[in-house]
Amino acid sequence: MDLSNLNSKVTAYHSVLENTTNYRKAWHAEVKPLLLDTLTKIVKEVQFPKCTIDERKEIENLEAVVLDLGNTSSGISQNYENTDVKRIMIKSNGSLIYQQLFNGKIMVMILNPHIDGYGEQKPPITVEILRPDELKVPFIIRHMENFIKTITDWEDFDDDEPQKSVIGFNPIGFNHNTGEPPAN
Image 1 (cartoon, helix red, strand yellow):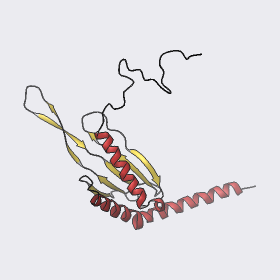
Image 2 (image 1 turned 135 degrees about the horizontal axis):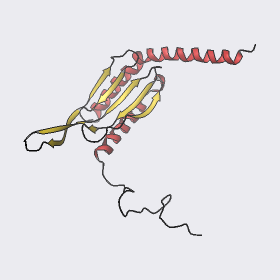
Image 3 (image 1 turned 120 degrees about the vertical axis):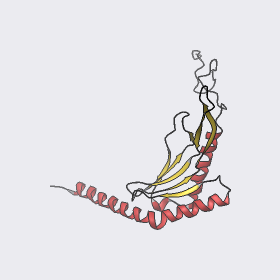
Image 4 (image 1 turned 180 degrees about the vertical axis):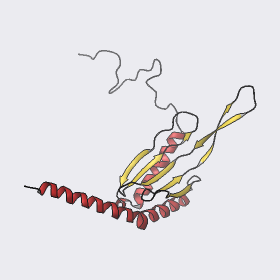
């Protein structure tokens, strides 16, 4: 009976389990301090919007470091008929999240801003998944750049890009159907 193929798979499995243990240790010893220190320095250095940098450690080995821009009034309120009562809609300003996964790797996510009671909240954007030794300061800076671009784009939403659903709009160019048959 030749078990060499199975044996190599079992060896790989043991290696992955060992990696998980090592990645979890690295989270506490290296990753979390690096994230807290680097994010704090970046926020101070570039006059980043008011935010908090929190550790989420309710679940052991599924911890997170979260840069959260908090909640504010959206400036939108719902008026109730025949009363002077208004319900203010709260805006969550977005978050950058470093979440420890079950296997000790780190998932980087961006949570878009959203207004409670106005449309659907988008699911978090997964930026990337990294092993602890892959997470370096330049990556964190790149994540912050991506985060600020994402929330700026959300805040600056408009119709710079014409929508195909606009009546009478018929884009012309590569990969756009002009409604005419192709020329022979």
